[in-house]
Image (tube, rainbow, N blue to C red; front, side):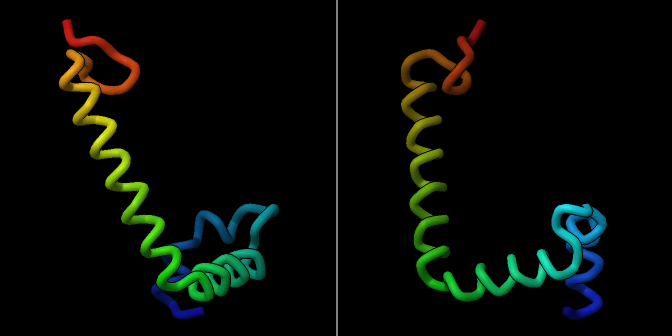
Length: 68
């Protein structure tokens, strides 16, 4: 793990449940997912944008609130 990664993920590493070994496994899993993860992220982001757009068209500021 690089120094930059250690700084970035330091909060995860400090957790007993994750630690440095767990963070390394998470990084490996994300790298293995590769293009599939990127495609899924794009689809989720688009769904969120579409949901917000539909909510605003119905007079809601978000999916759970009404504009005053």
